[in-house]
Length: 325
Ligand code: SF4
Ligand code: SF4
Ligand code: SF4
Image (cartoon, rainbow, N blue to C red):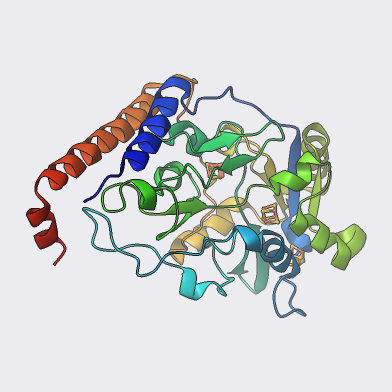
């Protein structure tokens, strides 16, 4: 194992900035929110690919990972996550597909649910990343910094919907400790961070509007207006609402004539990878919670362990060579 001086310095600076600054930010509701009206989505049945999914893939294609191959597993794992040969897959979340349309058959009806990051108000992914690679932006979106992410997948573990997806063979771990730390980079929807910063709507929202006009599935706008609209429609039209309370509140609200409990019972029975549990408690109550500290500490311990491992291997190159066989 060869830990270069540059690699060590980079690692140290990441480690120190994590310790000093941390990934703690004030719980923020954010400027914008999205309303997703499930009853209006037909899954773009007349298209070869749902237009919102297509728009997301086109808009973000330059940010998709290009892994260095061959990809090697990192200690102690024997496997790695590689979606690069399945980048055309559109029926689930992957590092190359940040939104998908989930089809659910309920009784005799088929419903279509656009699924992407919920952009939680108090996101556990942001709070518990040991490397401080995620941030919550003032616009309300949670964003992964692909330059800082080691791909340890803590964000996916703590996300109630398991949204972020990992691609191995890319990212900072390759430059620092390719055999001992992380395992790639995590990818997910960032609510089109550069577009919304400029006051534009997300690409998926625009694509649906272009197809359906006033009947578009998505309504994007100022959070208070979106919440007011969703609550009013839920009350007046007898609709169910999802995302306002789950995980302590989010920037993504779903409306449906079907109870979400019923929808999720089916997703559960089908053992779907992405479910919609109604009871989602946010376990992070304060900005300096013990869970976050443990996560931070475990990240620190892993790094220290990795450095010790690297130094030991450097002292005993023969042993390292044997391990590679
Ligand atoms: S573009 Fe609109 S109608 Fe088509 S799949 Fe996406 S949300 Fe549904
Ligand atoms: S849905 Fe998951 S990935 Fe998205 S902000 Fe919430 S916790 Fe983070
Ligand atoms: S908001 Fe942007 S990044 Fe997120 S799913 Fe829509 S198009 Fe993709």
